[in-house]
Image 1 (tube, rainbow, N blue to C red):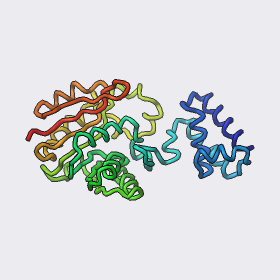
Image 2 (tube, rainbow, N blue to C red; image 1 turned 120 degrees about the horizontal axis):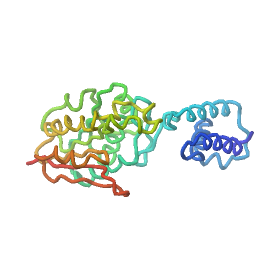
Image 3 (tube, helix red, strand yellow; image 1 turned 135 degrees about the horizontal axis):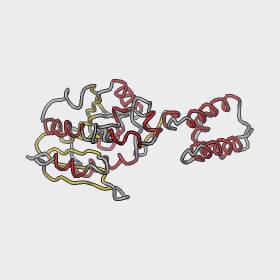
Image 4 (tube, rainbow, N blue to C red; image 1 turned 120 degrees about the vertical axis):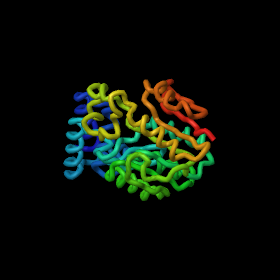
Length: 275
């Protein structure tokens, strides 16, 4: 069997199982099995599949058909133009989280001290460190997640210090110019409607935010006030239904604004600590 035929067979299996983007998924999995990139597949479409490639490809297809996310099979996900290592210990970085990066760069371009609360894979902290040149402190309650984030920072040569703690409890007060976070915000009531591959494979501690999805915001906003210096900025990713409720929690803050994405979905809320 050559590479072109293997791709077609994999695509058909994924289509029959109603897996999204079946062709792209087949390409990514076969490239991973071979240890190449997708471009190589097309340049060698007539090449015969080696036995070890077929074994790995078959296993990856089987895992994907069972629902395992492609990113956990390949162990990587692109974010803001960089490749991040991911494991089931961390949430897979989403494109929508890039809106938090853009908001941070626009609203706090001169921040010298930045904290990323609940860093997960380190996507936000590492990206901001590389985009700003500022050394960043990132926290996570999960030691395993912090280890994944630290490996990403090391591999991408980003200056980030990692601390394992609940929210920012181990960090000093009134030190930071910017606090950024992507807290868990899916309501428990939505658990059964969440996409199965997300619900069954991604860490629940990074997904679900209590009965209404707002538990972490209730704790994080006062914590951010403690961490921020006067005039410091807070930037949070939010769920599409949660903007009004979180805005109400920011009653004592200045310059509260909700930013929408290209689909007009509320995606980020930003605020400034009163000077």
